[in-house]
Image (cartoon, rainbow, N blue to C red; front, top):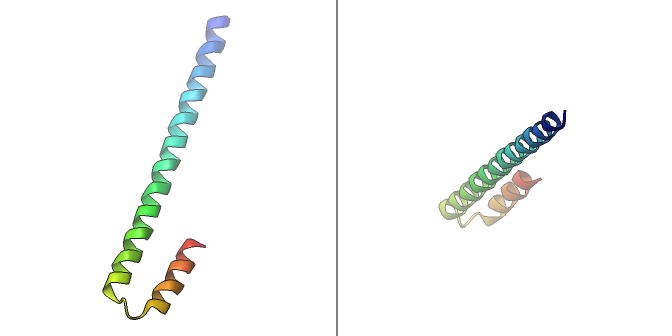
Length: 61
């Protein structure tokens, strides 16, 4: 009985770690994508900074 319990607990912990890692990767990807898009847009039309600012704020909501 004891061994079974320990194994279950370990498996659940591993699943949680994997899920956390997956979520962290997703967030990092999203942030990198948003940052890249923002910098590309900013570099592309630096003169229309008010447009870029509005788009940035909309994206981060």
